[in-house]
Amino acid sequence: MKSPEKYLKPEVIRQISRLDLRARFIVEGFLSGLHASPFQGFSVEFSEHRKYTPGDDIRDIDWKVYARTEKYYLKKFQAETNVTGYLALDLSASMGYTYRQELNKFEYATCLAAALAYLMVNQQDPVGLVTFSEKLQAHLAPRSKRAQFAAVISVLSNLVPAGSTDHGHCLHQLAALIRGKSLVMIFSDLLADPEPILNSIRHLRHRGHEIILFHILDEAETQFPFDGMIEFEDVETPQILTVDSRAMKKDYLQAVASFREKYKEECARIGCDYIAIDTSVNFDKALMEYLIQRQTRF
Image: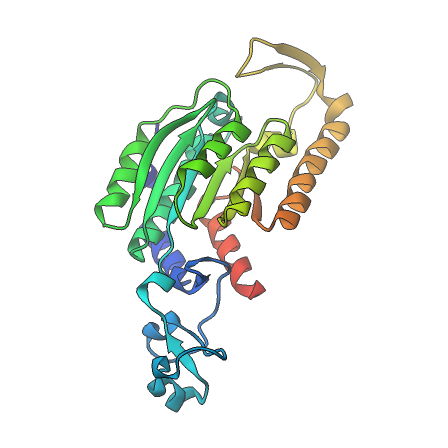
């Protein structure tokens, strides 16, 4: 497997870092949305303030900020600004598929996860890692020290997708494992019955966690660039299917669109972010577009 460090280009890291990850962690210390700083032109330290609300102790008001903005802001405490993140990667065999892209789905997910781990550690926020198939596999406890990024990279670089997966069971296990409200970032192709997966996401939300669901499909799975009679082999079972690609293309694309739309609608109801991506989009571009989208919504 290719090392994710290869894809963490310095120019990409610099570009993403400008979005100030810290400014997103505003509700009880976890992600609720990218915010442009209300203190444009002032010190970056002001991104760690929050607005005064009735009942707050006026002794915590930052009067220097008031002198510049004529608005009341309180300096956040460390507990309010830190977030614990968990990267949860689907390790099933289907994630190892690629049709003609340089990266298969798992390598693509790995690059996204590595970039987010870098950002969190750079902001001194603890980040941990779990992988799952039929059960939870690798587990790296959250840490915020610089060495944690190297530890995450070390684990990611040695993983090989294999076997089948039980998303729902594993995500329920993860919900039981996590202590304290956290940001859970899930990376999967979600090629299974949606209902158990959505139920496990509801479980995570019920326990107070923020969720970002990265739905990663291969370019061929979203665009179906096939012609003529094609033989498909299920990578997780011995099943082989021969189909007329021209005859089924329209129905297939409609099914994929409905599949994605179901997740989009249900995730909106649950209150988690759903990000549909295919591997033809550079992973750094996909991450940038998501972060900018979050920023413009708040």
